Image (cartoon, rainbow, N blue to C red):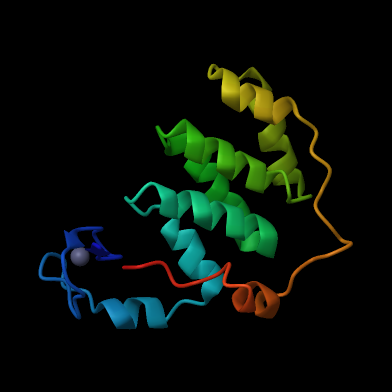
Length: 146
Ligand SMILES: [Zn+2]
């Protein structure tokens, strides 16, 4: 298992307290962030499954702070699977910013993004909107390994 510095994303074979590369204190860095902020930061994680999982969790939590970071991920990533997951997540947000951006992707050059943008997905819930507590107890949210 690799550990990652959340400041510069350098990986290490062992847990580090302070990053020898960029100098940040890892526990302190994460300690200052709430769950949503941690997930938003994890959208940049170099280990490919972590940002995908973060996007999915953000779509369940539906905290509006996630809208802009999800848009940024779609604009910047070269990983189309991540872009698609971020797009799926974004569709769960009923804000104008989110919806307009989703619409703009209907002309996206990459077919799988275009198709996902065209699909009108019914919003999840509100029949069952899990609270953070239930997500945690179901083990769906665990701290990613850093
Ligand atoms: Zn670092």
